Image (cartoon, rainbow, N blue to C red; front, side, top):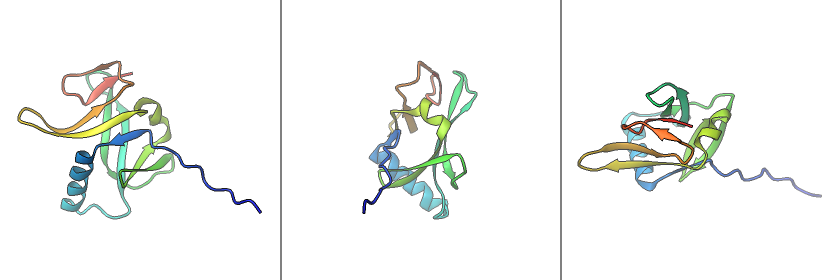
Length: 118
């Protein structure tokens, strides 16, 4: 008897250790419920055409679920083509503090780094 296992699906994004630490801190500080995961996506708008979505949410019908660095990540299936290969990082420097998005699919980004065109 053969047992069919679910294929291992690799997450289309990466999240750095520093970003995981900051996201975990935010989850604890804001008492995010255990049934929520990190929602990563895109929406139309921003100075370059698309803006990144990053927040905590429950899983929705159109979502794929991934585990990235121990964190549950929800991403709408149609967003993966814009985010494939992206890394989310946490920057804590003198001139810049916040999440940064290193997206190889972005053909142009705005100065603030939170919107892009593809």
